[in-house]
Image (cartoon, rainbow, N blue to C red):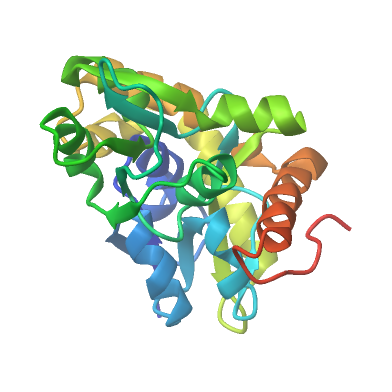
Length: 272
């Protein structure tokens, strides 16, 4: 029976999982792929809907009872953090503002809550990712929290970056920013085997980038090829192959700070 796999249609995920999804890894399980944005998978995983699933690190406190964190396949790095965007001329004061965010259990929103303490907006609205920048540009929202390819495209919407939460996090902690994690359902997926499959899939993607090109572009939400390449180069890095001690320390720092601030339940330390 096939294992159910849920990842986003973003270029980093389609690039990483191309070989696994297409049955190119000898001995790997067959997978049944579902594309879903991370705000969907965060809550779907809580219901146990997928065997292998990409979620936000911020959602781990609600998921680690039923899932195990895999040390590969996710999104973690430097210079890749969420941005807080406003229209040109905004004074930067978010007190009383309405802010659009891509999900209430995303790492982006958790970082925003940690960053904005003392300058908290009046209202938060969860908005589909592709509507955030247009909504800020037309005045529907005072500010927007964006991720992924928006780092490369927000100036086209006439917007200004009020804050780069990745830069803020890195300067404050010295650690990379933990964005997306890959989880394996306990009792269903052998985590060691799944780790080997995913690492092989990553290595195959790097060895022959052209092999996944058609698959990546087909699901890239009309991103032009140049932006797709930037996206993959930024989000698929050494931490995708192996979180290592630094990656686990980054996750511990995020979840520890969130728990200390009363924003999430506490979880056991990941770095042992």
